[in-house]
Amino acid sequence: MDLALRQQLKLTQQLVMTPQLQQAIKLLQLSRLELLETVQNELLENPFLEETLEEDVQISEEKRSGSEDDKDAYAEEVARNADWEDYLGDFSSTSRQSSAHEFESLEDSANFEARYASATSLEGHLTWQLRLSRLNEEEKDIGEAIIGNLSSSGYLQASVEDLVVQTSSQPEKIEKVLAVVQRFDPVGVAARTPKECLLTQIEVLHYDRDPILISLVTEHLEDLEAKRYKTILRKFKLTLEDLKEYLDIIQGLDPMPGASFGGSEPTYISPDVFIYRMDDDFIIALNDEGLPQLQLTSLYEDSLKSAGDADKEYFQEKMRSAAWLIKSLYQRQRTLYKVMESIVRFQKEFFLNGVSRLKPLILKDIADDISMHESTVSRITSNKYAATPFGTFELKFFFNSSLPLDDGSEVGSESVKSLIKKYIASEDPKEPMSDEYIGELLKEELKVTIARRTVAKYRTALGIPSSSKRRTFF
Image (cartoon, rainbow, N blue to C red; front, side):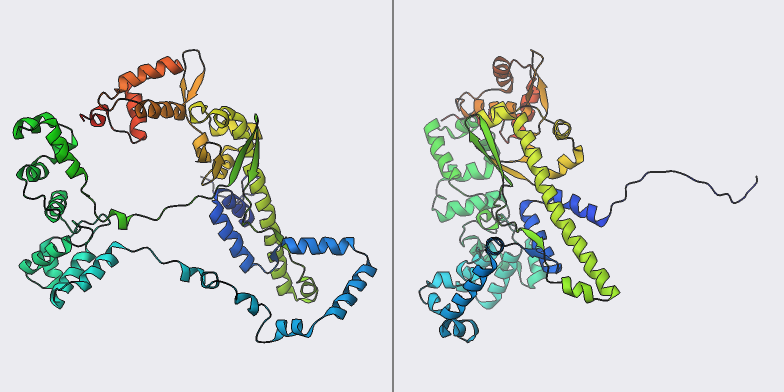
């Protein structure tokens, strides 16, 4: 085999992801709040980037429209009417705005953090009660260990043996303190099982004198959940009215006493796009509230001319970065508008009549309509929300799979889910609809043949239990 060095020319194509191109792609998939944060960070880091204020725009327009004589006359008028108090207001230790603050309320003058208190946590709420209790210091230390081992729903995640190791105490003392903590507010917290939690609440409510109620909680919770009432009626020789009274008591108990404290804070959505209906047409408005209008600053032009080679290279790099950011933001808003315009065109029936008229739609349909790549459409629809006449929806909501109709047309899966939800909401609780019967209703209304398992799949996706679990006897 002959080994030798050779020179060879080869023509290839490859995509080079420059930092500017990566930034533009990243901006596409940012949510509105993430975009605002990114722009604010760029304003802080890039000296060539500044925010355009409406006042600056108006002043610049007035300067351009006014003549030189008008400018001179205005300057003389300002100099003539200048007051010494104005001068002191700008440069003295007591500004002229201080008098205005005297008329502000205490709430308005306080900062944001001082006006709003943080939400109470389960651990803090229980610790506060523990410190007010009559337990001694050793027992309070045990109580802190118990509170520190609670889950977000309020259940104790450590065993007595684990607490013995943590506190170097005796099991009897731990059980004593545990019983005290379980009767704190919310009652039943620090329970080890759902049965213990419910029994503690029954004891505090003084319902523990009824042996049937105790037996229902300790032995028949699964029967009550599965609604196997006949077995319970035969065993305790009860009537339906008597059983209903017991069920009302049990349903009034809280199986997760710490959930109200451990739940996450609500997420508030700021829509990226607003769609307004005007007769049979729609107006698309991008939400630019809070988004700074950027421009290149001219403060560093003189410095750029007199700067050295190293500084000049840094200045030019920052200028290019600022110009590219402004261009990328414009391209992002333009792409978002074009995609939303295409969605409204494809899903016009939805915007006119609601979710039941949502049509099948895929990314390729939008990409072909606006002559863009599917990946671009996927990025611009991620983490974006549209406020429509029928509520606020994520842009991904408008893309859904299809089911073939008998006449050859198609219907969106979200429309089928909407009808299933509508049927179940209007059913008789004593005679709930089966999945097979719902399939027959869909066939009559949509002319679509849909299998029972498909109905069950959509029903499960909606979080709706089966007909046997929806049935009520009262």
